[in-house]
Amino acid sequence: MDSKTPQRRRRSSVIQNGTITREKKPKRSEVLAKKKAVEQSIKSARAEKDHLASFPEFRHFVNNGLSMCLKSGCGDTLSSPVKHYVQSLLKLNMEGPYGSEWLDEEKVKRREMVAPEAHYIFVHEDANSVGDETRMMLSAEEASTSCVEDSGPLVGFLHYRFVLEEDVPVLYVYELQIEPRVQGKGLGKFLMQLIELIAQKKCMGAVMLTVQKANLLALNFYLSKLRYIISTISPSKMGIEKSYEILCKTFNDEAKTILEING
Image (cartoon, one colour):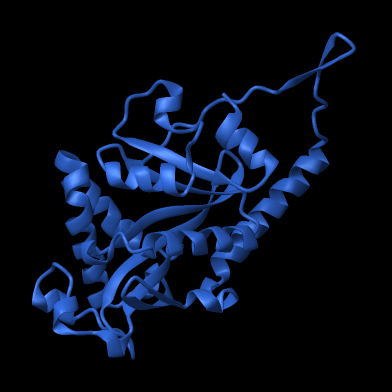
């Protein structure tokens, strides 16, 4: 995930009977109680190993000729073949959009992918639907190592974490990567629908993610198809020139005020 500069927020004012009054400052005890509740919600979300368990209907995706099964994972328990797959697919999909920044960014992503707080949704082809023509556009050796347990080969993954952004608990999507041959068939939208459900169940205020400006297909996917918006904490909203935008979709008024509206 790209580093971000926090913005300053002003306390809002209200007008009553022609008089401008400041909103009441919350009591210290209220602030501490709220902070404790937020920390507990993030701790609880991070501790759960299989977020798919609450959404069994999302364990399978069958649409547009695809037949996939989904499985949960954690960064500190990834097998060597899966690590290799993640690195290879990241390079395949992201080296172009990052351009000259890729070599440095790749090192960052390798560290991020194995962190204990990294949660994953892995997408496998159903074992009985795999044929020679369905291998991804990596080498045969890389594809052959991507089978896990009783599933077919991996075709993509989603890496996400539960974090604080501007004191708002959010589910942050670090990576949504699927192989080019299965893109454009509804799988990405299906995964993001699942992520939004997980975020709301775990009492997160928003789903957030970072997209490279050069990745026009991804920007269109999130902004037009999924109705995400450019967040107030995105560099472009603060007059800072960066190669990326930070997008969000909020689920409550507080998150909306801080991450979508407050300038």
